Length: 392
Ligand code: SF4
Image (cartoon, rainbow, N blue to C red; front, side):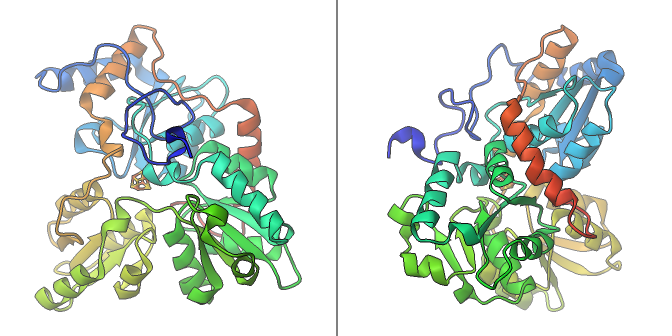
């Protein structure tokens, strides 16, 4: 395998527009120490008026989220942008796959801008199209491809969503992964149906075992860096869930021993985690759910309750600030930001906005027509799933 095929490379190096890892930011970036940055951002936003709509993902820095017209998870933000057709410019303070989703779901006259092209997603980057196509061929060699439905998490690149679209598959969020899996298994009646779940092994495993009643033995792990995924044909034939070996570098950090430690330290503490966390951690938690679920649970919690939250630190800090009547701690001993999300800082935001004011569209994210059409097929299948909100 050549260097360019490796899923994880130093962020911001080189030029590979297809990669989640992104590319370097061209042009003059304002200095981070410029005391006028906030005023410059305010002025640019005022000058652009209704022509710009700023999206802020929940995991984004405070210094940027304050300028967001709307906050949320990736799918909600993309739909919010689509509902604002008068906004010619969609400035997405999030990561690359999110901006792609916004470009897919918004109109052709709307331009989506990612203030720093180096803001990729390490999880999305763990499933590259060529690797997935190789895996798909291997499933054919094992004689099971006709039984397999590909399901990809929203946190994947547009070309992986398109792969699912053209191969009878669907996109899911962390809120509807169980409904998507039920749908997928229904597509292949006869008892031998299987799902290839991309790219987050943990969401796939947690959903299969905790919500679908499968066992860990029903799941196998496809490692794209091993020949034939590191699996035998018999292992593939015996599996119901073929989990892609990808994970979130943020949620993958939480560990069971910290849960144990916090329970000793704070008897009665409630532990709530995101389903991108490892299965062992989820098993030890009291509650598991999407970012929106975590926010709503904390909002509804009684004053005086004590919580440990296992999700990205920017969000946990904002929740703690917004709910001083509750005691909220982070489920990790160390600082645990999404480093790629954090690349969207105030200098990049000001740089992108001031360029728009000057008539220069910088860092536009464009999904090509074929990819968009096929990705929309998989997204539409998700939208057609029965009765569940589609938030991640
Ligand atoms: S938090 Fe995890 S899944 Fe989300 S953008 Fe960061 S690396 Fe990707």
